[in-house]
Amino acid sequence: MSSDAVELQRLQAAYADVVSRRAWRELERLFTADILVEVDTVSAPARSFVGPAQFSEFVSAACERFDHFQFVILNAVVEIAEE
Image (cartoon, rainbow, N blue to C red; front, side):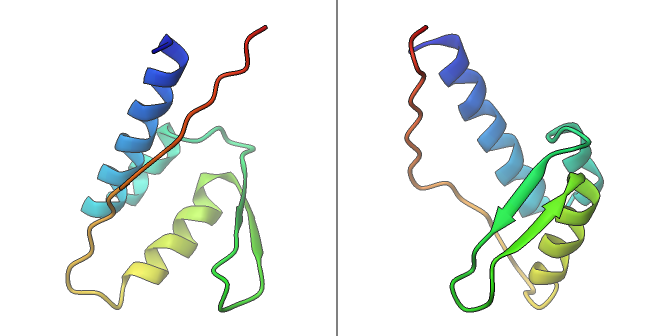
């Protein structure tokens, strides 16, 4: 496995940990300041967020209704293009 694939898996694990702990301020270290995040929940129109603060507001609001919430990545496929 390439080091890029390992780093992507570590990033996914860090994201799942931050969301599970609801440590919203820690999202800033996982995303670049100008990141564009597009979310399609299927049950509502797709939305776009720029930067970790906007995305964090959306995710934290979505989790508020749950007494317990754990984000788990069950499967992820990482493909690294060879240069």
